[in-house]
Image (tube, rainbow, N blue to C red):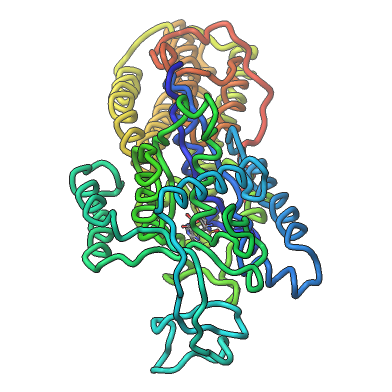
Length: 510
Ligand code: MSP
């Protein structure tokens, strides 16, 4: 059984509607999954929903409904987002599913039996209004902010996981495995965090405070709390406890945002796996944040971008193109609708959209709707071909190193080259001449434009699957399933029919 390339996103909290951050992470992961599949790698791509916890329980209480009702309706919202964005996930895991509860409980029991989980008193500050523990860090000017209401010091019995025993092992593991975390500079954050002694991790909440969770198998008075539930989704979805697990695990990439690398993914998760004798994920791909005017998007100030609105207006591929071309994976990026619109009009509608519509137009007018054969090769064609060869030589290196924004830049500079070439050849002028050389040039121009667009579309497939397919269809082709053998410049299109003229990216005004 050959190992699959397992790639996961974080699972989204079921405490609010999806926003651009959720959409981006799924698109980024989808681009990698599609790229790998096109490269011939068998892929398993998982995303999902993180459903338990205090916030969900409280919002259900406030609305007078059961927590699962809230989760069910958010699951529909998040899954609709995936569908609308053309996300090619193979599985969607919800932490309320029986398959997940079973895995969490079996792991907890195992760790408890081995003495790696123990019961002890937990002492801390508790906000009665928010029904949660708060720490000194939450204080503003030495006082608890009003949203916490009365804060009291309480002692509560809870279960703890022996995190601290593994601190030295983890430091060594991170130091000796330079490719574990991408981008590398994020490892430094984790190692910094590990300079302070680790406390054991409190993994439970008494049921009278939090009932919306997975019950501890060895004490029905408690549920497990947040990370011990959420992180385990990765191995549940990989089929932990079944034959399939060997085929899927370890994950090749956990794709996550920078806020949840340390401590959850880079400290708790590796230690949990080590304690369970399960191999660690191969890599973390840690992306930056989408900001709004330089600050974190927050619901309270209305700065939340609803991806569904943009997708409805501009189409999924335009949205996918924008987030992938604007974000240098690992860095933060600022979102503005003006920029979105500008990119849409210039790169997509003008550069790509016009090229396609010009070609189809001329193909019907000057070549009876049939893609002609290239008949000569002059310096104009040689320049295009040279540009293609250098793009082909570079683009895979960029895809492999997650420099998707640069890969798109290069592909679009090739598209600009095709536009330049079209202007230079001016087929509308060539068509007026009856001289044989001019007729040959006309056929060659239409063939070169078609071939260039075919190749560019194939390279765009991971990012813009729908648009790539439309362009390929309009050249009488289907989307490809494998890159191999499809990226040679040639004349395989000759004789195919041009499709009907259509507008790929209708211009949008402010
Ligand atoms: N439920 C946890 C993750 C558990 S994974 C075992 C969680 N959920 S979340 O809904 O808050 O975030 C889901 C993902 O979206 C995280 O990777 C997070 O970093 C990412 N983003 C949330 N807001 C974001 C932006 N504004 N920009 C980019 N990504 C951000 O954390």
